[in-house]
Image (cartoon, rainbow, N blue to C red; front, top):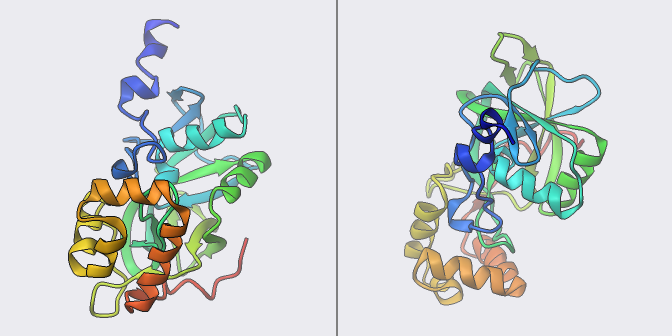
Length: 245
């Protein structure tokens, strides 16, 4: 590999770690700009839209090149994935009301009228889309359409619609009924454990214990997911009415 390409490896860019292997790093490190994920490389993009592919808005680890590489490698998929940085209005990043079997509490989009933030759209071919669908068993893929949701590309163009994954268990609220925002894995788990003795009994007193116990026992994850609902920590994302992809 020549020197230029060596500088574009995920390792060199600090993007290599996958939250599936390092759950406390969730949602993983995102790129600073658009690029083409091609195996172990993040290459420059020649265009921002990709006809024939499906645009999927990533609010969590699907915007992490390390995570995407991990998901594709598990299924032997080697085709490149365009990752496009966008400015999205109308969507916030909430906390999924379930405990993942890989050890973290993931993100889910929530309805947030007027809120604007930088997020990534990943453009997936049919094989890649089926693979990502298979990795999201707790989510429904829905359509986010203009004018309620605005997705603006770096060149000012907007996408009339994109897909995104909405957690079917709902999202966690902030104590006042509104969806809470996802602050990153370590502070999130610290806050959740501090607020629930039963959650501490299930998963321990620290984020490290939480992740280790969740990864070791799918039944414990299911119990934790039920506990969120039993302790009335769950609310709607505001996106449940949208049609599925």
